[in-house]
Image 1 (cartoon, rainbow, N blue to C red):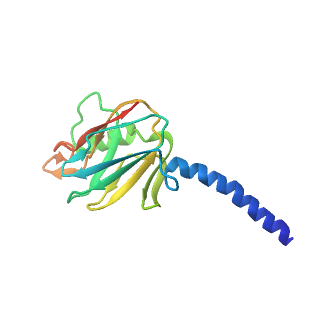
Image 2: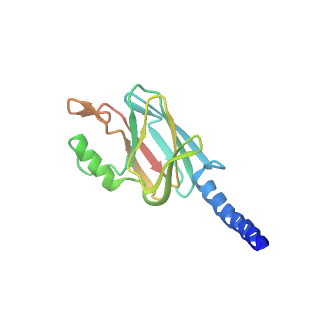
Image 3: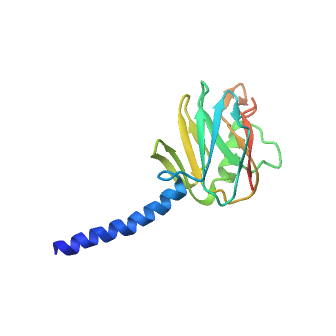
Length: 169
């Protein structure tokens, strides 16, 4: 009986170990994604403002907040008509996020999961913090990046200039 349990345990490690390695190579947690881009967030901009990635190639986007305020990173198709108000933007991004139906999308800090899913609408980064967004781009095209947190008085980080472009080739 003990041999059977031990053999079963070894088999489980081999089967699950192989699955974990495949998943880890996709997420970049264990082996690192083939592409890595660092985006610095400050008041009120992303640097670089344009990020270019290859469709089908896993990428780590390292988000570093060097500002004094919390910022969010959102990616979505640019709306056909101008949206008014922070609430309208949040509704639009939630419904149209680039990070939907593309497989696993993960946010992690120093090898620890923060969140993983198949439909993330925003990644928040507190001042002085650094998080990594790992995903495999699937839809080609040009998409907008924005931070749609309110600044007060009807404005937002976005209207103050915190926007950019994601190009997926």
